[in-house]
Image 1 (cartoon, rainbow, N blue to C red):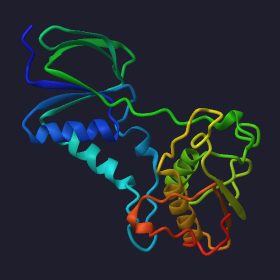
Image 2 (image 1 turned 135 degrees about the vertical axis):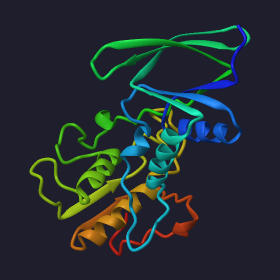
Image 3 (image 1 turned 180 degrees about the vertical axis):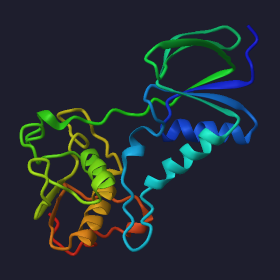
Image 4 (image 1 turned 120 degrees about the vertical axis):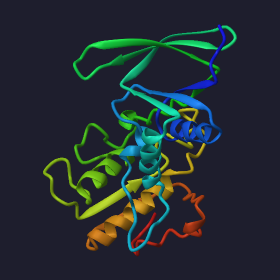
Length: 235
């Protein structure tokens, strides 16, 4: 089999989109496959955290990449699709199944010169941690809050839909945890939580905030190591 100068990219999140756009700039076609109905992965669920100015949270970046990818003639986007089979011999032969809008499943075979795995990540499920997630309705994850801010602009208690008067952010849940064997820092959680806290304080100034972490780690230069941006207590 003589492979075409085309690359198969598995995963349509930020990594997959970036790979496809970068290849296109080099004149290389790509087939971008994602099992979800829409591109963007988890990043497409993040809320813009701009207050009086852009805070460089990156939430807008994925939408810009999606727009460019779907309009790029060098990128063939296949959403709602899965890899059924893949084999290699002087290239790669891949069988892709795609669920059509009428519910039927279609199948196609693509021959490519290379394959890029950009399968993304799986969010940590804190159900077994001692914080009450899935036990108490108003305990939510960082991603839950991102979705809430994106949809409703402000946090609302899942129990009754009311705005919370007090909020606590508990950091490092699932990371920097020797019992789980997760010794690393994700490098994004503190910055994301503080940006959301600042956004919430701007929109609902009366909301009391508590930020609990073993050590606050902020890798973004825009933070300058400050944890007092919200004007409330941090522990």
